[in-house]
Length: 110
Length: 115
Picture: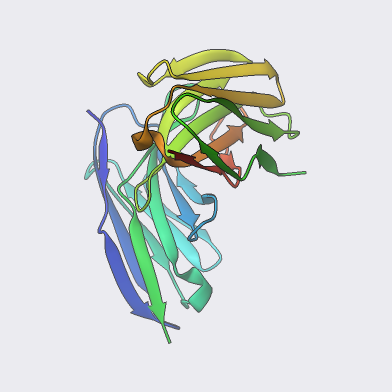
């Protein structure tokens, strides 16, 4: 089967750096995506790793290691507005099918 | 226009009702998706349409019936639902290409309550 596991909750303070991990058991993923979802809102795309290594997009960076079946999202200079759920998602197939991870609720405190 | 719209925002229906959810995008995306999301859980893929043809049905019960009338529209017809079908239903779309990955754009969802 395909499964992606994340910590259920993470708490950090404003201005800090936080890392959200994603470990997966699957075969055939083309890459790993990250999505943010505020309470009551729609998921929005943050980043995508097709290859091993680090991708940086502003305050957010994402890392993938296929050999370790592991990835993470790094959020720097945390702001209150970063409080949200974060999902990793494995990309599979020609239809860009996404399998979402279990999700991590990030709480940013003053 | 990078927006996916969904109507209605909220829907309450009885178990004997028939209703439809609608999704629209004008980004020229050729793949469209329906997801179901329960509270505090990740979105679960239900259906994928690519080039207006159903390409994936994730073993969804037949009381959910998708339809793609054209490349911009996606419907989800609901009939004889159960209370456990109450959830947020999300529509998404993306480009299709063999050259790389494109992000999925999600609509705001329809919050469905089955009574």
